[in-house]
Image (cartoon, rainbow, N blue to C red; front, side, top):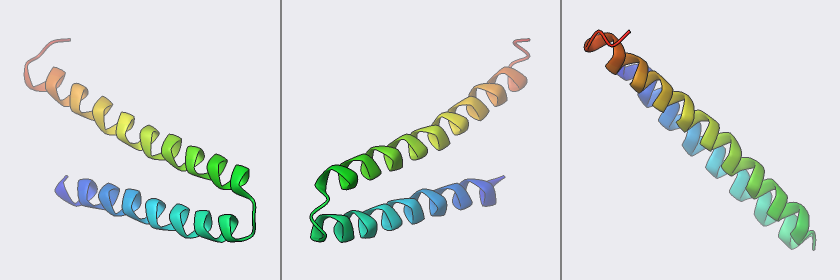
Length: 68
């Protein structure tokens, strides 16, 4: 279970690095609007990953305390 959490952490870090490199390339090419949209897409992807983790947390809490 801990390996999964570390894996998600590395996924989020990888997405952040990838998005920031593409953002720099797009800004240097003079495409600020596309760079901004790319950043927004990256934030949404990371937010979806975090929401999935929060859902797993609440599911675990329900299981632990028998709240079904």
